Image (tube, rainbow, N blue to C red):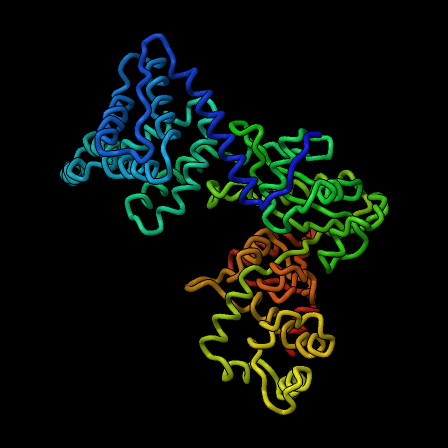
Length: 485
């Protein structure tokens, strides 16, 4: 296996993206270098005005489609290569041209609407409806479809949307283009085409390298760490799309253990003995990572979990429980925001008098109340036994309330994004684990707490319907007891 210096995931991801862009430029050069000689000089990196006009002309040529299919592919390849040659400023200008100059023609829409309103005869109305549908389709959609038809064009558009997501927040024109691209990707993305593959230590090194880059929950520290995650009592699966055959779309990592795991450091301990998977009674889903932000908004994670559960149930007849060991990523920001808004008044509602007294004693302030926010900002609070003991009851209760009661604005959906994912897939909240992740990231996002979501095979559909239909969160008796405390 080739050597790899372990870097930050963002660095590895950027390296993979650079390599992808280089491969695309080479692949598209062959498409563009046809006998008709359409290859044009690369624009300036930041797309200056004179080159912007050339790009507009190239876009119009693509849409006119003169010269047949080979010519059309060459023009699209030239346009794509021009985009890949630009820096971030140039790419943003390129996309703004696509968003503004090749949007729908609103005068044509108004005219088509007026024609439809006047149409009385059924045939005339049907014709007017077809005409309206046509003018409501912005020309840029056809341009994007031409780019998709190129070698690796689907991956190119996925990465393009990832970049658009960052730029579209403050730019309505780019936001509209991003929505158009999402609709196209969703229309081309049938979950029935997805292939489930197991990733093992014997998988190609290029694929293992991508696990480093795409792992979003618990960063992989070394090759030894990765080898441990792919050992006999572990399973790693990913979905692949035919148009991106070497690119995992979403990756799930599973540990085969006895009993429901409650600590991620223990679960990922490289020195722990490898369990005979035939003796395991529980499958713990401890990491589910979307590999491409450009596919956000296209749901296929739920299909992955169901497929993996089926695979594991077939391979290991002894498995009785399927559960997660999940982060609570939005709890920390929510708690900080609420404490900043209401402070001591809120703490008086949340904590009993006995709990506030215990915290004051543990913090060494005597009878003087100490703010919860202050305690959690103490760097080593989780290493102080008395403070840990005093914090545990109210914090477990707060997390239970947060996961079950807190909702998105004007919605019955859970506020926490990981909770939304698992609850909508038919899981129930089984157990909250105290100091389950004492990494810096785990302490910052949820005071070190993690949660088990349990997938009971005979209750998945019922739980799913209850949550999606009524916003009802299914919980274990342990969680219900916390809510009543």
